[in-house]
Amino acid sequence: MTGAPPRPTPRWRSSLRWRLLAATLAALAVALTLAGLMLASLFREHVMSQFENALRRQLDQLTAQLEFDASGQPQIDTQTLTDPRWQRPFGGLYWQIDRLAPAADGIRPAVLRSRSLWDTTLQMPDDAVADGVVHVHEGHGPRSVPVLMLERSLSVAEQPGTRWRLVVASETQEAHEAVARFNSVLAASLGLLGALLAIAALAQVSMGLAPLRALQTALKRVREGQDTRLHGDFAAEIQPLIDDFNGVLDRNAEIVARARTQAGNLAHALKTPLTVLSQAASQQGNEASAPLARLVQEQTDTVRRQVDWHLARARAAGAQRLPGLRTPLAPTVAGLVRVMQRVHADRDLSIDMVGIPPTLSFAGEEQDLQEMLGNLLDNACKWARHTVRIQAQKHAPMPGSNGPGLQLEVVDDGPGIAPDVRQAVLARGARLDESMAGSGLGLAIVDELARLYGGRLALETAPGGGLLARLTLPAAA
Image (tube, rainbow, N blue to C red; front, side, top):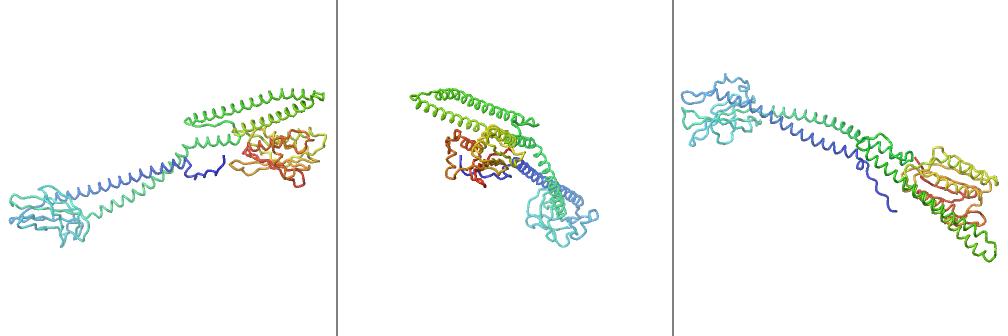
């Protein structure tokens, strides 16, 4: 399937670790914010409640000290008020007594007041307060400083129709400063706690995803051909997944092996009668049957080539997607060189291996590598005059693959292949010289197998003349 490659997903978006960590940190941030707001609110309510209770005790003390003289005027013995702020001008604690006269006379504020009020009065809201009931108000005292005010009204039996309002007030600046200091300490503490919890969350996420990293390592080993199954010490929670995955790998390998065996059996079953037909045709010596014998011989050769072709293609198609395939390159090349030296011993050829790294491996089956290199070496030995050279090196990843690649070059000093016919010799059964033994499938099989593995075969002119066959294949990491 062709088309533009999928756009890579940003690492921060695709990583499960960062998703879990982001979700955990977001939950921690929300929880700490709500906790901070709740604690700040509770502390403020507690401070203001204590402040109000203290002010209520001052109101009770003022009420207890209230007396009336013979003319019915209120009196307060200031010596009995113990808090020194009552006596200090603008000291922050104030009291005031208002006369709530009948409607005709109106309200007479500040009949008595504390020295701390100096020449100011407390402005109270115009509300109706039942006798003995305490009302709480927020307002402004001397110099427009915010204060909390408590008022209580009462009646005296000796003064029917007259009610008195007692008011105490205290500046709230110190209480608000205490709340602000607490909020600052609370914010710093929650920030430190959040940092520690973030570190703990990172550690927890890392430890929780450690089994997945082990799984990733095991999968990498399978992909690179170092293992055919997932091996490792996995957590009990993901072990069933490992077992199922290994079961799929085993089943896949079993199906491919069975299919390849069946293909081999079918090829063998076809080759036997083809051989019989070919021998029978070659034994027909009279002139009358000669045309029929040649026709049978040609058709049996064609069928045999097709069987070889499709057998090699089916074998590679079944193996090139299997995980865990790894074939060391140097031993395979060395074995093929020894075979070619024996096969072409009568020609006194020099077949050299040049600079093949011992760690370089092919990510595929050994039989397929032998098929490709064997055809290339056999073709080079057939046409070479004196020398055949094979060399290999690492190569950049092939298009559509993230894995490494390898490049093999088989060079001979023969006549080479003209550029205008190079593509034609890769066709099945194409032969440039009918006098040379062979089926014409060698280079075509190499090209087909290479493409099945995602590689390619390129035919070029060697630097000193002759043919250079460059084979690009996937490498095992």
